[in-house]
Length: 557
Image (cartoon, rainbow, N blue to C red; front, side):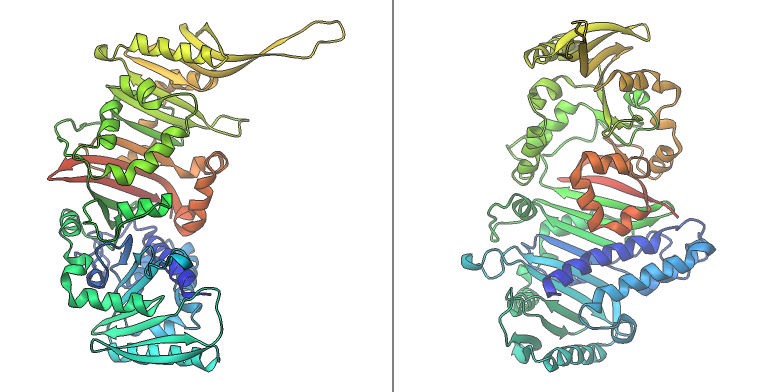
């Protein structure tokens, strides 16, 4: 396997190791000698000194895998400890097995407390003729630098003996670096390079990437560790953590949308997340820089009442207040450095909804509470949706709904009213005519495209009459009174801007059918999804230019 594929696998493996190690962290309160009870450690990624300021992505595990394995064994139920140990052993060996190394024999004794992986550049050689060549850098701390040097020489010697490459030793700025020069043509010019710098062991997918990492240490103004925006975001995350994730939003956006990206521009649009341990699983505290400054005066002290019309079986629920203002915050250009990075994603989201101008036809009049949910119904391949919006006098709701009815008619639907639970309900339906019978009679079939009605101070939209009936009867058994919801929000801040909730255990099958991207994400992070019960995200507002959010990964034992 080429080193690029290896390091990508390593990244997923490190995250998976982190996730599996903390599953079942439930009954320990004062019994662990691993000092991870508070959620993790107070350390920051020191490997960031080798990472350039313009790096698109950096992932750091700040706890030695052995400590996480001990925690897993202590917290796992007796019947699942062997399974947990096997999972961890497979992951650890998978990290280095593709290099012909054995984790226990070659790495375990010298590996320290930190493993940092970074994509240092989207095109490290800036050669347009060979396409984009991302640079990958792996930095691991060492308890025994001399043993680490021996490990490097032994591993490269094995490869040199295979006859496919020459082993090269080079002095660069006082550091011995080792890399391979291929003897035969490869599909990609992907030369592995390594060095030991003090207590750090560095791996890169090309000597240039490794040399650039050494430059970053000597010229401190080049490194991510000394980037003021990164430090501002990281220092705002005060809770203990076992890992840190960093995203350079313009670079990631360029990567996703396959557009150009300037690696010389100042980086002030970024996301930094600190991953900590909680009894239910993992909590990610995130800090985002680049959003327009917003007041925290409008934070909600409790879930919005619109959630009372969201059924307990919902697999996705999104709720908050003033959707119009939220959209304006995301899309406002003046003074908002975050918008250029987010713009391609937002445009794709809006374009995915055909024949409706979401910002104008929907968002503009949703100025009070709102809730959106997907619910599975028996016999259907896809989920039905429910949208609840509070009636706000200033929003001219009647005119907005009349406009939606007119849009439905313009798209070839008929608009009629029927009683549902003694409430007048508007139905958008597509009429079709069946083939004539032997007697020459015809039958009209109506396919429901959407329905809406009013209840109390809310208007409720849905994709089917069955889903609307669920919403109207939801107050008897709403999502916000379900055990999974209560377990999730109990660990999240009380004052927030709303929630995004995903019940993975109940909805994974229909979600994977309805959204193919979900299947791709699941495959790339299988250990997480195999143990994931639910995911809940809440936003905490913006303060001093930093927008904070918290994500809870509720994990199964």
